Image (tube, rainbow, N blue to C red; front, side, top):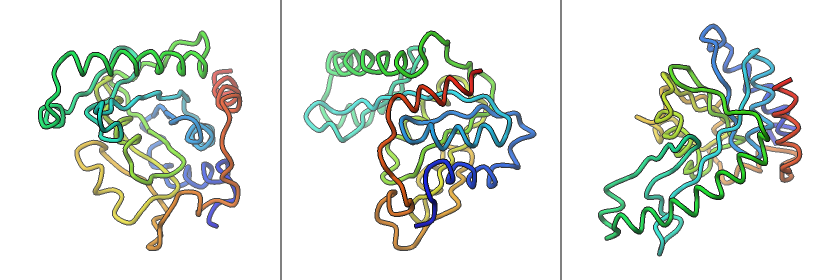
Amino acid sequence: MIYRDRAEAGRRLAESLRHLKPEHPLVLGLPRGGVVVASEVAAALGAPLDVIVVRKLGVPFQPELAMGAIGEGDVTVVNTEVVRTAGLGQQDLEAVTRTERAELARRASRYRGARPPLTLDGRMVIVVDDGIATGSTARAACQVARAAGSARVVLAAPVGPPGVASRFAGLADEVVCPCTPASFFAIGEAYGDFSPTSDDEVVDRLAHAAR
């Protein structure tokens, strides 16, 4: 165990992000657990907090293989090479996108309520998760943040595998991951309490930050 819980992990992660405070960043948490960590980071840096809701676009016959990602504001990132290799057409892509965009809208509304999303255009953003394993969701979030106009994207997580920064070359301008144990197997191993984060806690933390 390295962290007692996500809140402690967020406070300790914030110490590794202090150098970014003069850049007046926006902090974006990946739901659900990443929002808990992000809320502590935002509080420590005196930065605005929001949720970054992304959905991977999975290949229909192999959903775990991402052919792109979507974010709010009609942001769409497509990996044309995967689409081509999978032999998919525009209709296939549009069908998956429609399904995922409906789920994205539902989740964003649940988490944020009537509050509009923060504007990322021209801003430096810190994308925060509670840990990085495969990195697929974090990868999608970085792509979406960039496509939404962010001037600089920093990916931050309390724990991840060795060499994690190299996995995000070209996606994140900086990767901050203070704990990368050589025997990394699962994110939960770094936490004393890694119980699931509820939607209600995500809503509460975002509402508190907004106030």
